[in-house]
Structure formats: C-alpha cells, structure tokens
Picture (cartoon, rainbow, N blue to C red):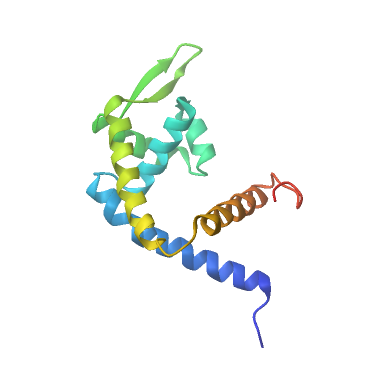
Amino acid sequence: MPDSVERRVVREVGAATRLIRLLMTPPLHAAGITQAEYHLLALLEERGTSTGKELACLLSLDKTTISRQLTALEDAGLITRTTDPSNRRSHLITLTDAGRLRLADARQRSLAVLTERFTSWPEEELGALADHLARFNDVLRGESTEAARP
C-alpha cells in the first residue's frame, strides 16, 4: 500500500533534517562553532540585540540551555552581554566583530558544502525549493494560509 502524501512529507523532511545536520557539522566545526552556536549567532546577526529570554523563545529552547550556550559564546568573545537599562535583571546580547567574522566563516564553509551538492540543479529548481520550504515553514509556524505564497 503506498504511503500517504503526508507520510511521505514527514519521512522526507526527517531525512533531510538528518542529512543537513550530518553535512553541516564538519564545516561548522572547522569554523570553530557548533550548530547550536551557529543558529544563535545567525539570529543575533539578524536581530541586532536580544535578551536571553527572547532568544530562548525564538529558538524554542529553555532559559537554562540558552544561558549555557550564551556563556560559551561570551567566553569565546563572540558575543557581549550588557545589563539592560530598562530591566536591570536582564541582559542585552550583541554579536561582537569576532562573532560576525566567525559566523561569516561558518556560512562560507557551509555554503561551499551545499553548493557542491546542488551543482546539477538548475537555479530555478533551487529557487522553487527555497520557495516551497519557506511556505512549509510558514505553515508550521501557523503564519500562512494556502494562498500566502506561490
């Protein structure tokens, strides 16, 4: 009996998730960061400044996990934490220049791995994949209706 479309989606997304993790670990480690650190640095680059609570919420992690990761990044000189003037119990977290450089290096290394894997794909197919994945992620976040994206 053939799989339902939904079951195929779950299976393929699961396989893609595992493969991406396997492919990305070596280039990220070569850049000196873990996947968790990469995601935190990228989010800080995108947002500018955030609190640990905001980062935990955005990454769906608990405060203890985020705190431990932020401490490692701060010890490595990749972020700074300053007291939030509007709430002295909170800290504002910002990417340092070293953090930006490390993130850029990690991105370049990761992109090289993916580019090598997708050399046989025409650009329009890669664009379509990106569009479908964006729509898929919107739906998972509950941010989209069927007509929201092409």
